[in-house]
Amino acid sequence: MLAFIGAQRYREHRSVPEIHALLRQKGVAVSERTCTNLLERYDELVSLQLLDAGRLHATLKRQGRAVLAIDGLAPDVGHEVLWVVRKCLSGQVLLARPLLAGGEQELAPLLEEVKRALGQVPIVGVVSDGQRSIRNAVAHALPGVPHQLCHFHYLREAARPLYEVDRHAKKELKKRVREVRKVERAVEGRDDASARATRAYAAAVRSALTDDRRPPLNPSGLLLRRRLGAIEKSLERVEEGGACVPELSRLRAVLRKARSTTASMWPALARAYRWVERTAAILQNEPGLDAAGVRRRLSALLAALVRWTRRRHRGVLRQAPAHFLLETRREPGPAVSSGERTTWVLTMAPCLTGGTGCEAEGKQQG
Figure 1 (cartoon, one colour):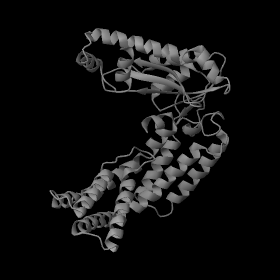
Figure 2 (cartoon, one colour):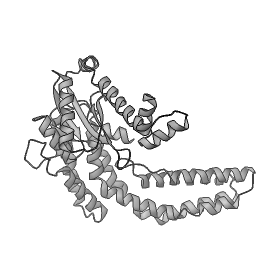
Figure 3 (cartoon, rainbow, N blue to C red):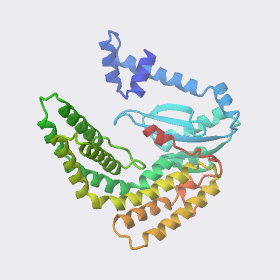
Figure 4 (cartoon, helix red, strand yellow):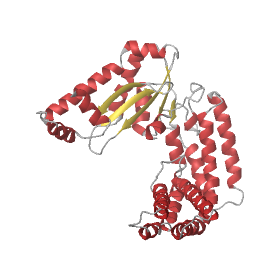
């Protein structure tokens, strides 16, 4: 029952009343209050296992340092939030605990508990999103420890205008592909080879339309345009082979018209997104540079971006990069010791050598 309740709460994101109803359906005579108590016991067992000193010391023996990532995973509005502290260098969870609130008073004790559990292993950095309560809790519990903005959250906020433009372009493209349904109706009730081929191509189009990706590195509009282009080229090859039926020709015409009508929306958006991809590649740090080397590469890229936006660019090619630069150079929060106007995303000391920055949230979302 403990394992079932824990899995339903944190893997399936079910509330306590929903878990209670599932247990009753399985014939388990238990009250809702008992479910709550058992969930608390589950949380305690998980915390004890995660904070086992022997396990922690064995995993930290080779690394000799710890870079922490902290974030809250909220399954639903109005319920407790599961806060997780994990090690960036290995991805191992150090502490997981549900809290009713995510203020500084609640988060600081979590970090202090992890610090005590690590013992003599130094904490050389903390990674999180820009939530002020987290930044204040880190400053209170881990004074002097560098605090870095998570690369995923940084890129998501910096590329938000591009994401909005991409979403609008995708919406316009989807409007012009609605005639696919008419092509499907034309072969309803038929089971010949041409009807099956038409339904298969229509299903491919529908799959592309409903495949919504998450920002910042997966622009769903550009992806939709590429996938529809690949389907159109496939239909073109079928037609050139002499095996194209009227329904497939009509489907190809729908795709060609939709892509040509929205053609002017994509080139500028694709060029602007390349800067986001180049920034992400620098932050991933595959060459294994130290923090100073990554800062130099990012500074050079930002300088090139400034020069690029001044070259007669207007609209999205000027507004989106300007927002990107603003988010990159914004004031660091109170948890960062430097008071200078600097790049918060790269304030951490050389503790992330080898591309081991916080991709925790990005992996979690992915």
